[in-house]
Length: 96
Image 1 (cartoon, rainbow, N blue to C red):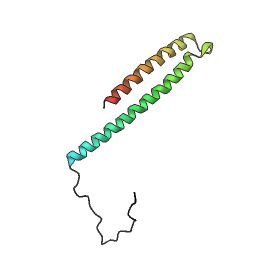
Image 2: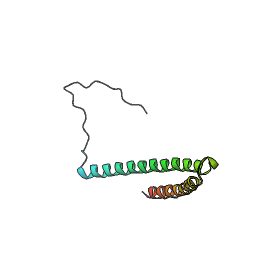
Image 3: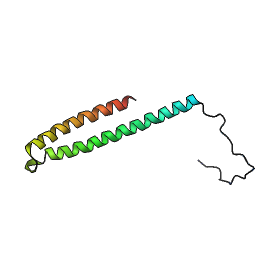
Image 4: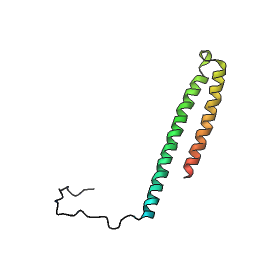
C-alpha cells in the first residue's frame, strides 16, 4: 500500500477537515468500546498475575522439607484456588 508523499502545509492552505464531525453519541459509544477493551486487557493482566502466583505456590507446595508443613499445605490449596479463579475470570472475560 503506497502512501502519498508528505509535504509542508503553507499558512494559506487549509488542511482537509473530516467530512462530518463525530456526534456526542458516537463519541460516547467509541469511548465505551475503548473502555471495554482496556478492561479486557486489565482482566487479562490479572489472570496472568494469578498464574504467576499459582506457579510460586506450586513451587512452595512441592518444596519439601525446606518449607514448614502448614505453609506447603496452604500453598497447595492456594494454587488450586488460583486455577479456579483464573478460569472463572477468563470465562467471564470471554463473554464480553
